[in-house]
Length: 499
Ligand code: NAD
Image: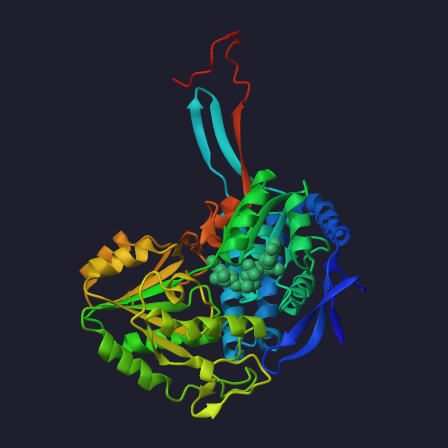
């Protein structure tokens, strides 16, 4: 069976003491194994990153940018190859995997503008003959820890900006679908990135803890579930590192009575069931305002009639399996428990039927679920389920919708569907969520903006990729300069004043 290795100082490692299985979720077969790094192997990767730091930092910005231009080309030309790798370990359909590569390319394009991004500021003549300028310098070795659900895009969210800023990186991808990260590291190498600038260690908590405790790691970017994000934030910040730790979500989509119901229903189906709901920006709660619930549910029910669920490599499949059997069973447990909580299960995915056909029992498939009359306090409402489960909460007014969303522990993404510009503007002003869509169900910001949620969806104060990532991955240094200007020198023990 193929062993997925680590990638340290430009080379794949050959052996592993500890390994874990990697499944093809569509067949249920453990078709690969992945190496689980020991503390010594992680230390080796950190040392490789540290050693590569001075030369990379000293590399001209134009040469650094060249790497990103070449990488962009590789990713664009070989999208089908990397998408197939993603599908074989994650399960998402090929078109969706290609979509994540395309969104990852945006981060590479952003990083290619690094000469502009790394410009500092200059103020001339702050005092007589005195100028001040600021520079942005790399922080050093950056640890990037990523989740299973976007094995290409999320690593690129972090790695592209971190490397562009002159840092070196140790990436620890999810052990559930680790091959994409190794592919990415080799693509960077092919694009001209010097060995050691990007290292990949595979593994679990043991590998992560070594990264969090190493004094040589200066910054940590994490994306994953909220409990782990919180623990990463606490441990890494207690060790004096800067940390951004993005967590889970429960994204609400508000549908106002004046909305285009057909468009809102199509958006809800796409955003709730795309990628089997395993997106941190998936819509998992529909907030139906006034009397909109009945027509909205009717339209959704009609649209999902013929939804095809199957192997992601089959071009006819619109939704693939969940990532593991355990995760599938957990998702189904929420649906199974919803009726006892007082909700109405309109479509029961635990029956594992789609378009009239039984789903393959070998793969980790579940059907889609639609649950009505969901209320705060129910588990199906409060928890992140991370599967193809859409809950409908009925509220009487816009104000009630706002109150509901603002009271939820998560604040990653949200959307409002309305034809009224005034209501949309009010929503943007009122809502306590980091990313907002107006008639856009999955408002993932384009690469030139930054991505991040509020509340339990993000620990730390920097959003990820885009302009905030340049701030996160650099330290600013401010230089105050005076050159001899023929004025007589004076001794003055007072505190320097610019007035
Ligand atoms: P996860 O938290 O289980 O794992 C994320 C990473 O942490 C993996 O690399 C994993 O190996 C590591 N890890 C797991 N347990 C650990 C532990 N005890 N100590 C140290 N490291 C540990 O998340 P997942 O299941 O891979 O991904 C799904 C989650 O990620 C969902 O909650 C989803 O909402 C979230 N997510 C959030 C965003 C966002 O931008 N906010 C984006 C994508 C995914």
